[in-house]
Amino acid sequence: MVVTFVGHATFLVQVAGLNLLTDPVYAERASPVAFAGPRRVRAPGVRFDDLPTIAVVLLSHNHYDHCDLGTLRALDRRYHPRVVTPIGNGGLLRSAGIGQVEEIDWWQQAREVPLLITLAPAQHFSSRNMFDRNRALWGGFLIEVGGRRILHAGDSGYGPHFREIARRLGPIDLALLPIGAYEPRWFMKDIHMNPAEAVQAHLDLAARQSIAMHFGTFQLTPEGIDEPVHALAQALRERGVPADRFRTMAVGESVYIPR
Image (cartoon, rainbow, N blue to C red; front, side, top):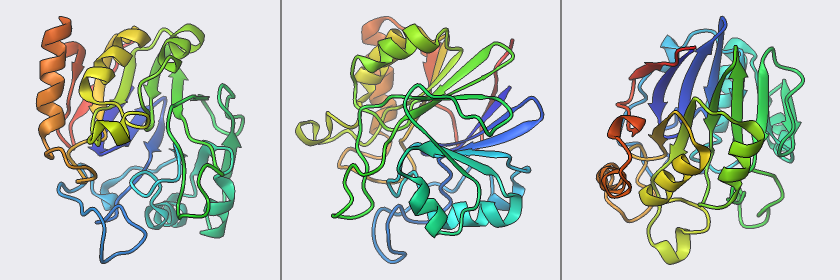
């Protein structure tokens, strides 16, 4: 099992001869329009044309920094992957011409993919415009094969669901946890963890290792683009968690998950 950080919440997961992409976003802006909105500040760690054949796409929710219809259409034209997503997102995808979509609820397993994929809960919300708030579900994904388990947490505020995920779906070998887009706290606390809360989530999950995501690609909120990295290092020191147990990756970097 090899995991490569493409950027933001996009990871290439290669396991058992299959290639998966999580929340694939190759757009220059996380926005409904091409001329405005948060612009990418780091290029994808794997060029689109260098991707291997993608069999499965995991789409955690419909926000523009996670659900890029242009990228999804390009993947569909080239590879025809199965897209697994929370309930309520299928209509958007099918309207964009995405052919193979499976919608599942929290704690359900996908039935139309060749490995175990379970939708895990998250504390977040959904919307594409001002009229469709929370009409589609959001979540994270547990990928399990050969006794190894990876959790892609999607977008989430901190909450008791991390302990419940550990209880119901653990043990977890690798957790991919968001650490960015957390300021101002009065507004973002319920939907985005800050690095200290992400460290607590790591502990709640009892993950063997965690890797940070959702930082350093799009300037979504007021904190500095690299501030989440520094805040994560400080939170790990304060909680006495070894730095190699929860770390950041450079875009394009890969990690091997042993049996």
